Length: 226
Length: 278
Image (cartoon, rainbow over the protein chains, first blue to last red):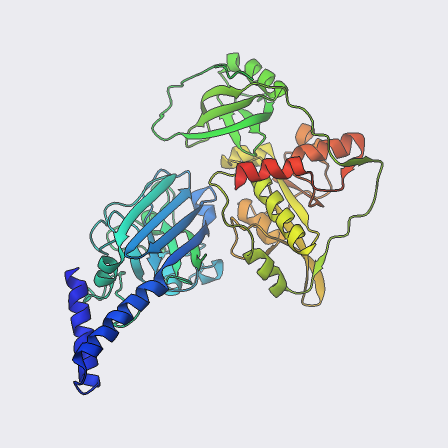
């Protein structure tokens, strides 16, 4: 909420300056109206069918679904994954608009690894972890194995965090540029993780701090508005 | 029909990660060597039973013959951990719209372009249930498109041989998806619309390669009875194509044994498919 109020105040200030300072009240109203408009446009139900990627690695054909419902200030994310590997599955909404394909294996090592997938799906926007209100909080709480996942969040809190300053511009998590909306439709949900004992080529890229097996993407889907 | 506890077994295997499935048993294939026995369920799933669990095999064979619906717990390796009957009943053959001795040639609709194919693909019902059976999803997708546009499609069935299943600890013994004829680059080719596993319509080869880690070709000229009773284990898979009215592998048996063919959707099949999958 604090971040949101700061955001509104900043936008109000810019609007006042742009309009020559006249009708400050009017500017505030149009900003509030713009924020409300954005929330209304974001409202709705969305779905991503999570289809397998790198399926020869997991020894199975992982598949799942992610449903997102936005109503007023409420954001609900429900997802499931059928995968026999009893491992932690990092799952996230990414900033990009295309799922990786086999052709994106640029070094031809037989695996579309984390780096190759990120080149297409782009950095993480919303980690679907234990806390949707914050990108960084809750990142130790991803679901595991054959999972069902459900989390709720405040849209204002989520957007406030997404539009805040990026404390670490070099990591794989990115903020929304100022003035940008969430624009879920068309963005990508990706899921990662195979058993730790599965051998991988030495050329496979990985998330800093994790193993290549924990990092390799196994499923991806494009979000559609229902 | 009364439910009764048939047999409940708990093995010493780790129960912490167990998958539960519910289905009748299609067949029990006893291993001739020291390897595990294989149980094939009607929903396409496979389970393994350790060779030393001899006392259970006759019960499983009887359960398969009766068509009882069982609930089973499987380990991560698809090993049978526990089993109990949840619905004991005789399995009656559906009175199909099957015409004896009819050899009418089925003419699938040819879609005019790959764009048209993608449009149909993207309109498939995405509200399927988790762990729904492929037979039911494929049947509803085909039926809904036929009702909407009159488009006559096919079904692509892939049957995995025991040697492939054992080698890869594969979860299924068969899989099915709708298949449409599409005019693309001047020629007509079959594309499989497996909405759950692919992002767009794919060629039969690409669809097959999704599931066949060996990427070998499937045997195309075999019958279902041959696959079911004496499959060539040097092969990894058999592939068969049928009109969209064919729902389950059992429909192949009726065709091959009695020369009767399905020539329409059965509302009983459709209702059962909706009920399970959507």
